[in-house]
Amino acid sequence: MSEPDPLPAPRHNDGSSPGDSDLPGPPRRLRVVAGIAAVAVAVAAAAGFLALRAFHGSADAVVSMVPGDTALYVTVNLDPPGGQKLAVASLFNKFPALSDQKRSATVNAWLDTAFSSTGLKHEDITPWVGSEFSVAMPASAISPVAFGGGGATSRQPDVSVLVASKDDAKAQVALDKFKNGPTGRAGRWTTSVFDGVTVTTGAGAGSGAYAITNHTVILASTRAAVDAVIDTTQGKRASLQSSSRYRTVESQLPADRLGLIYMDIPAFVNGVASSLPSIPGVQTQLSAARAYGGFGAALVASTDGVTVYGTENFDASKLTPAQRTQLGAAPHANGSLAFVPKTAFGFLALTGLQQTLTSVLQTVSPTGSAIDATLQQLGVTGSAGIIGHLSGDAAIEVNQAPGQATPAGALVFDTNSTSAAQSFLDHLMSSVCVQSSVCDPSQITTQLDAGVRISSVPLAAAPGTHIAPSWAVSNGWAIIATSPAEVRAMLASHSSGSNIGTSPGYAAVTSHVGTSNNGMFYVDVPSVLTAIRMVLPADAQASFDRSVAPSLGHLGAVAFSSRNASDHMTFTVFVQVR
Image 1 (tube, rainbow, N blue to C red):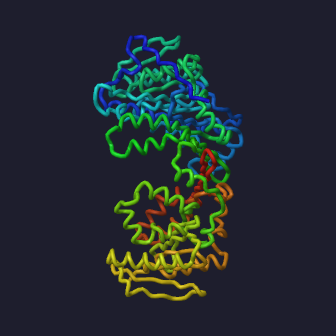
Image 2 (cartoon, rainbow, N blue to C red):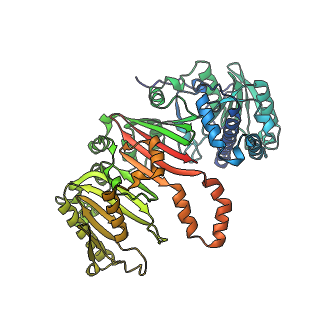
């Protein structure tokens, strides 16, 4: 289905066009947008906490009021379904300041602080805020021209904030109080009627426009943005729900969620492309991005953490051959993780290494370029390059060897030839030593570990440290590490089966993100925090315990995974809360 053609925006009742700037001066424009965002976030966060008092939940209804040309849409469900609400309450109770007994007082204090300069307090906000909070932005709003890029066409970007109202009269009282308060009284406000709705418009610093219709408060950076929402509400403009891109993205995300973000990638690309015509190479990259459609992500709570589920759609026929090959790799359990030690702080793993490198190198090092010549000399590319022997799976891990303060790390990748991999690593490390002068090839030593040859060379620039670049190949798996000890740890993890797969932290996050994927990122936050604390001096440790530990101490492991499909990619991010 083709995208709808939004109806043209009408002119204001005062005769000005929707594109005219209501507030002169780029710095002032940025302050208005920033102010709207700050107020919106404060309202969303606070109301979301307070909404936990009820358990009936509601669906996204505000989207029917969002104009169809919206390129960025963010919505927060302040009254989520019962299961989500219970999960959020469980998470909050793990933080003393947000427990059932203290939650209201904490949130009220946040609101009072956020609105201190406006003359509003929490009792002016919470009685009328309803079940939804949304932000809508057309593609034109992200153009540098819209943010004061210069010239006569520079104008105020159209940004709208929609807040569901459960008491329009109290909402109006709060808006009037803001208008006459310390910040709002400088706005020189006027009122007019548009399509039967009263719209209040400011003409000074810190102002914008607002209205109440359909039990929704509209706060916007421009009068045109308010008018567009009103027209959409009355069916005079197409809504975001009529967009096939939005509907596709929304259907791929969980229905029970705390919030959603949607981006129309082609619309954003077109907005950026129109403002950046003279930057070399940018137009080519932006053209490639037009193969992608909508992007979306949904936030979901569980009793042990929060998960972000995301999706990005694309038209495979518009991708380059290298991109299609890269995205065509089937998701699976990454074999390189069998080498990652159980004690690892974290890792970054991916499948399809050969396809990924090929796609990247076609862009950054075309045949005949200086970079391509260097890569051939190092044995990466060319007829005998290692890239032709890559089997797909690879990972980078970070660990800490016992008794050492300096973290250790390693790169492991699969090949179809042990001899080719060994030859490549020997040549690569020797070449790096010669060209960089940080090590001496004549100082390379070898040792055997269960029949596997481990080579290493000390760094001239780091005498007395435990860092000594080391490498080995075992059954086609190539390992490059920061020390012989780390190579041995990798080999032992693989042979014994006591690898990251047996880590309780890893097991906790994979129940949410899965183990079959095309890419994965994992961090054991408690282990990282412990390692950081250990290297701090005593006074810094005390400060760490007072300021950092109480907040971050509730975090467990964090993981990200992505999966390819024929016409879209999905990703999952999980943050464990203990």
